[in-house]
Amino acid sequence: MSKLVRFDPFAEMDALQRHFFNDDNWMPRQVRSVGLPTTDVYMKDNALVVEVHLPKFDEDDVNISVENGNLVIQAQRHEKEEDKEKKYVVRESSSSFYRSVQLPERADADAIEAHLDDGVLKVTVPVTPAPEPKKITVKSRGKKKE
Image (cartoon, rainbow, N blue to C red):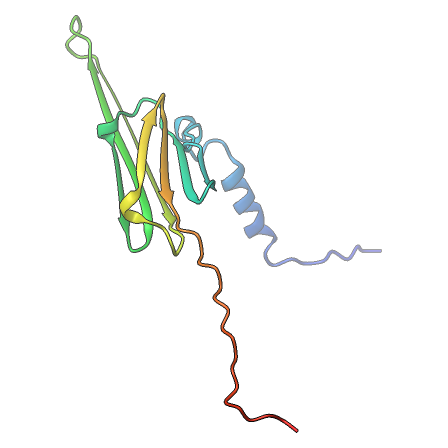
């Protein structure tokens, strides 16, 4: 007696995809270990606060702008270290960061403050509170319903 086996036309393709994306050899270990800086975005006391952990970055490495209603944070640094005793030894490293956060409708872009302390960039965007709804009284023109 023969066994019936269900045919899956995509089984081989699925196996190739699993092999490719689960195989540790497809990407160098250095690239896999690169982490993205921790970024926290939250509201506090009528302000949008963005905190980004940027260790080894200086104030001059960070660029903050407002573009089309978005807060754009960019950071880039490049280090080059040369061994003076061995002329052929050069150590270079570079890091970059990009994050765009949509600003709330009532954000005050002219009053944004940013501070970089101990590798933590804190950007505070004041947000004006929503105006209270205005109640309008309805008046009649003297005609009364009967």
